[in-house]
Image 1 (cartoon, one colour):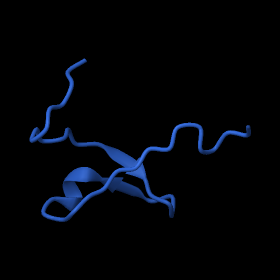
Image 2 (cartoon, rainbow, N blue to C red):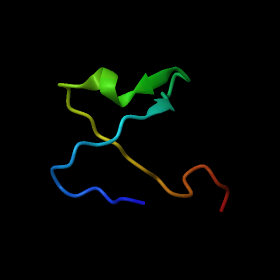
Image 3 (cartoon, one colour):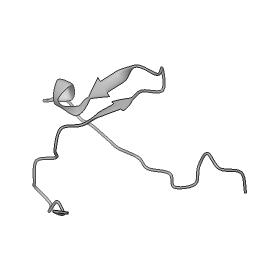
Image 4 (spheres, one colour):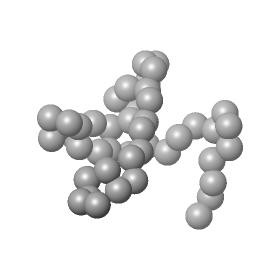
Length: 45
């Protein structure tokens, strides 16, 4: 696996939005994009 470094271009990917619609990173080119990951956020504790 290759790790990204600061300044690298992120690989293109598609994920479902909060509205369950697919969103592809490349479709957002030129816009500010923030990715937030919340490990264990949807698991009961």
